[in-house]
Image 1 (cartoon, rainbow, N blue to C red):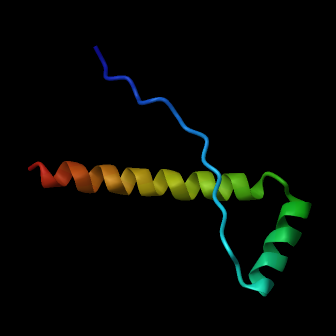
Image 2: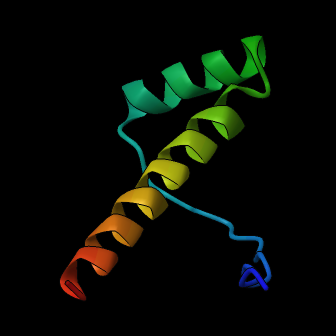
Image 3: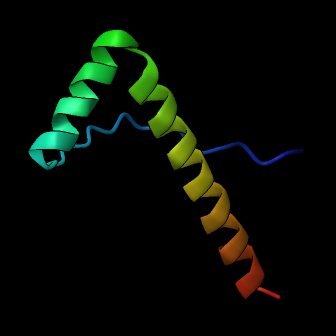
Length: 60
C-alpha cells in the first residue's frame, strides 16, 4: 500500500521587501493576481524536491 502524504498546512509568509521590489510585486500582482501564487508554488515545490533528494541521499 502506498504511503499517504501528510496533511497540508496553510502558511502565511510575511516578508519585508525593498521599496522598489515591493512596487514591482504590487504592479505584477495587479496585472496578474495569480502570478505570485504560481511563483511561490513553483519555488516551494522545488525546495521540497531538493530537500527530499538530499534527505534520501544521506541514507545511502
